[in-house]
Length: 279
Image 1 (spheres, rainbow, N blue to C red):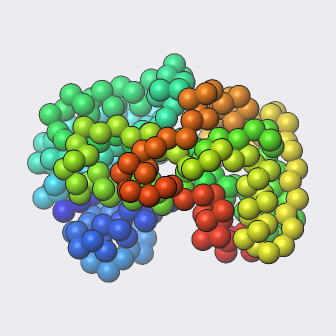
Image 2: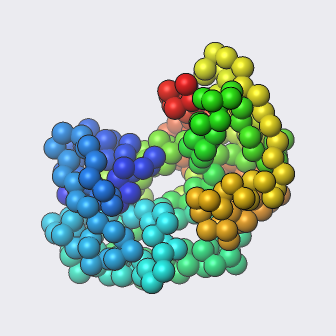
């Protein structure tokens, strides 16, 4: 049995579906009850309280660990989740980390994630670590303005990074959970090309078959908007990357191809698959 945390999100949902389709027994973990594929067990748990995860780990052989905002919650102790997994007999953990632990290692959130990576390496469990860059699904921030005004509003319109389709992250995670050859692997996950916000807006317009205007925000305007849904420190970190990506953050990684035997999906494919969100 494989436990998937963050099972209702942009990575966890397709991962759960892929594992179930492969004939695996899956326990999907999220904070709230949600519809799951046939045969998938659902357990509600809050990862900020590692003890709440214990019922879902009984009998599990592997765990996909996606912490999201739980890593930043007051009093959170994500290292305890790894200890809980080991005590429950889990043999393999695949951790969703971030490329930032390499490219910008000194921010508090990156220091915490690097410490969690180290805890996993030293746990005695089999492990694999996934380090994605920016997500194509972050474009869903623009869905409301596209639906209402046919506008994408974003900062740094002509500065791009090689964002990745979360479905590709899910497929890599499935391979790491199921295949022994990935034990001890650290994979940097990016899309196939650098793409700017202005180019993303054009791809969304192409998927819709109707015009979408691009409006460039100042950094301060973007920070104010982002701080409504994330810690201000994380908003600043994100804007630092978007506004002045380092060579390492501009690099297109070969790791999706290495794991899956195919190139990562381009943003236009993500936009076409998710076009309903923008209608």
